[in-house]
Amino acid sequence: MEATVSQHDAKIWSQFYSDDGILFSKGNPLNEGRKAIDEYLEKLDIRNDRIDNLGGYVIEYASHIANWRSGEYSGIGLGKDLRIWRREKNGFLKIFRHIGMYD
Image 1 (cartoon, rainbow, N blue to C red):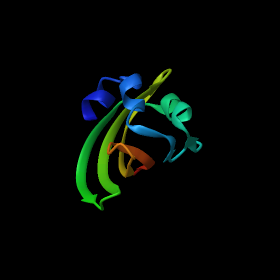
Image 2: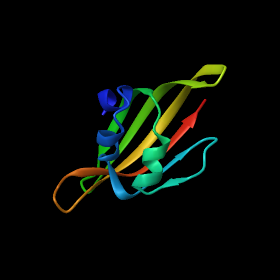
Image 3: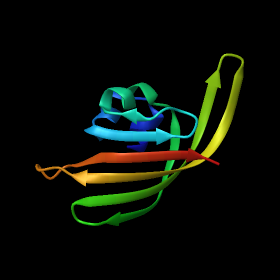
């Protein structure tokens, strides 16, 4: 997952999310559904800090560094992520909810 994000491979990245996934990040509107999440992708340096396996769901606590550019402006943001993965009927884990926030 980390390589997929850092290489900005949107096609592979979107496969981690369930079709009804939701991603919310500070300063951005709610991204609901795979199409909206695909449009939000950004380059992140992701670190997994803790993972709790609850059987049908997995909770992932992560932190990240985002390098961004917008015209003449650029910066670095530090943030945290909380992902809830759901085990699908076929046994695969898909991201069900994802909240990202910046410090």
